[in-house]
Image 1: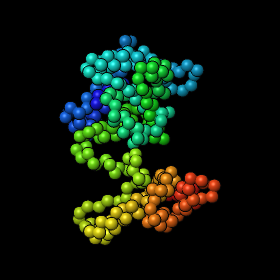
Image 2: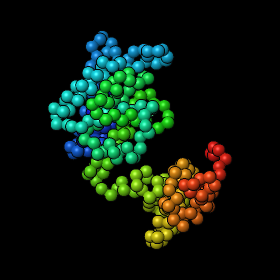
Image 3: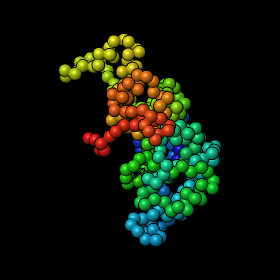
Image 4: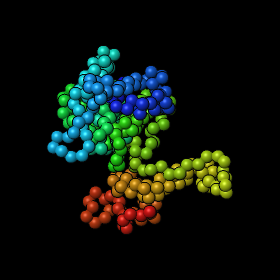
Length: 277
Ligand code: JBH
């Protein structure tokens, strides 16, 4: 896979040299090319932004530097043997970045990222390249960042670890929370390792029992407990067929009720008193 990133802060992408992405790169499984958008400016101040048409606060990134940068990156990539580019535009107004999208993108041979600062990029840039390649506008969550560079790091790590041979163990991401097709997408419960007692704290007895069935059941109950606390939406959206008899017992203890009136799909729901701390 080839990755290109065009940014006004190339140093911000230095983490792509370390850890999992850096190692995949060193092994030649990933080609990463970071470009400085200001290389395609020709005025004394290397201007990449201008005031928005229609007024309003902030600045908008100009068409010309992006157009020249992307034309060059595309030409160089094709010349280097890359093919089927896709443009990834990190933006708070994009579609949510999910594990499902990470899996999809990991199947593409060439990703070009355009992280923006200021109020975003002139719309015509995206519209222009959308005529030549698939464009994915993605948001990494409902919070405000100063720019898209951190989002590029998030997306590249999520995608790179899915490439064949990158994780080392092909089985490792099969039971990830959020892996598409998992029986139910639950958060993982707590994990423990040696020593068996630390500062007076012991580990749950069941984990030392050697009883694999009981251990699996305990883990599942803890996953249901944790998901109820932090991500009740994941349980609400679960197909009820994903829950066995023991799951249903635990869900009932946690305050969930099956098959509410007026809910024909038969999902679980729960009475709740608004924001809980
Ligand atoms: C900015 O503010 C952000 N929230 C979520 N995703 C983003 C992606 C790119 C830029 C954001």
